[in-house]
Length: 396
Image (cartoon, rainbow, N blue to C red; front, side, top):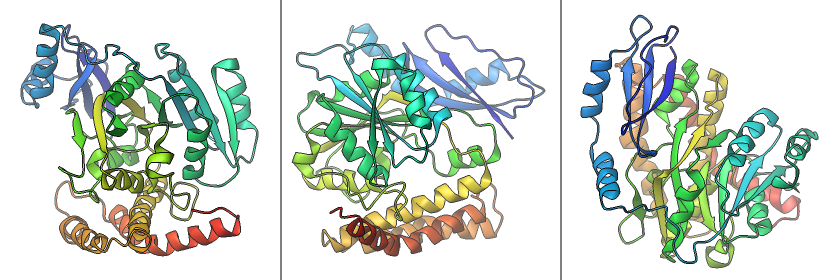
């Protein structure tokens, strides 16, 4: 099964409905005036889709983001317009031995409008010169930094220290920015209470069963409504709806305000991930806000093989429980135990039962068990990660 990913501009709607042999489904990203406002899936039959069905499914989508853009255009209000003192951004790409993904990401960054941003590639504990060779092809447009403390958190902290601008935007090396990505992030820092902004993440491709399952079971996108999260309106330990670090921007002085990323968390450590989850919780608990803005769109290449999918989802389980372990041990936050119990009772256990019963659209059992096993490993993984940092002479 494969899905063709296309885009449709609703102000001038056109869609190629033919020549879709080899695809079962079409995923359509809807835009209005260039802004993402929704998505829909349409079945492909005989290598084509029905234009009438596309229209029917558009009418059945959530209409509010579309009408909001219509009203904004009618009153000539463009949220991305420059405001006095709008900050410049530094874009940081964390990478390790993925030259093809990095090249695609940097090509996308080079195509962004020039708002005075700088681009920094942080090479985390490289084994070869592959990243150096990629970066050298961009001349002065990209700055190379090497960070030898293992883990994405150490690399992110290095990026924050190296950045010269007021906002630091992070994008994963396996993601590609949309043309409006950076402006969509930066515009939200007009409010001084906002310490972090996340954006919409769409799949770059859905060509394999593993990619399809990832997008169904653990999508990175958080919808098409802009939202502001604060401790006053949102439970600070439930940060999954906020977004992901694959598409995120922070104020450059965040280390001085709430502290750095915990270097015992993240890809490349025994904890596997979780650094964004933990930082988002810390921001909310400190009384600051986080904004999710779908105008900041990035396209993510999901893992293509089933073993890679299982590895990633086990890592998510490890990372979440590692972050909760940190909150329990260092922040003395016992409610994470309740969170873990609720997640198992209301999400993981029902999904496993549905898979055992072979109910339609239930997630595959092996994928669920991988994530559940990762949850059990998370607490020990965090303790191992802290011990490793101490052996390296790093405090966290």
